[in-house]
Amino acid sequence: MKKQQFVSLSGKTIKSILLPAFLLMAGASLFAQTESSKILSLKQCLDIAFENNLDLKQAELKAASSAIDYRQARQNMLPAINGSIEHGSNQGRSIDPFTNSYLNQKIDYANYGLNGGVVLFSGMATQNNIQAQRLALAAGREEIQQAKDNLSLNIMTAYLQVLSTADLLEQIRIQANLSRKQVERLAILHEEGEVPPGQYYDLKGQLANDEINEVTTRNQFDAVLLALCQLMNIPYDPTLELEPVRPEDFLQTYEGDAASIYQTALNQLAVVKAAGLRTESAEK
View 1 (tube, rainbow, N blue to C red):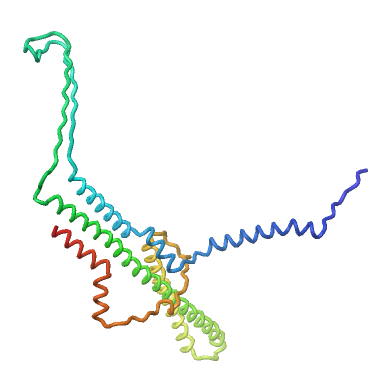
View 2 (cartoon, rainbow, N blue to C red):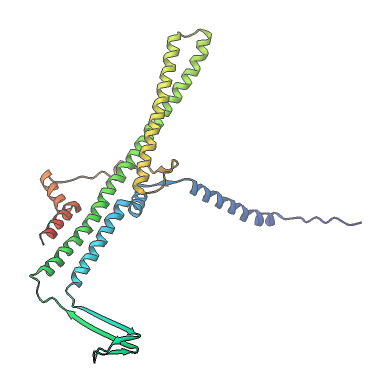
């Protein structure tokens, strides 16, 4: 007859076994929660847009093309050297190139050539082309900054539209739920004949209007959220949430009159600088 053996575990041993398992499950739960909660801040939206936006990528490619044109314009001042090598063979009856008589044999021939040239003076066309391409490259870099400025404004506008539409949708949902509870309460009183029928059906009409407003606002919210995702060039995600914006973070005091602010904009705005550089490039 076999004896049954029981292993007894002390409290310290149980803690040593359960504590790592608990920490592992807690870490997995926290990771899952982080993955499921897609909350983006305004800065994160801007960073994603700067990384993925197609208009910005196009401006960067245009500037890269201008850099290639500028490098090619400078290299046009270098000497040009061309070389050629030609080998041939004739088998059978042919003309001897030295005696001009017919020969019935194999003749091999080869030609080698090398030539070079350099432009000494072209009426300053080469130098002006270099200056024009240099200005075009500078304009392309300013246009990249212009694309970033426009993208930043569009992202901030779409970001605020999503937040405001979300707040409006929440208010409409609260109003619709309130109307729905009132209708449920009046439905009981209406069955008992305690309220006039007109009051009951007026409230049902109000509930229908609130539900329509909720659907319309929900569609508006989806539209502005889709516009934000398009600016960031990411797939549309209806579960995407945005961090609220504090107005005090954006409140600034601008000193000076309208003329000084306008002059500052002329001196600093990338779109103005790019237009001036394009004009100078065309003049060159």
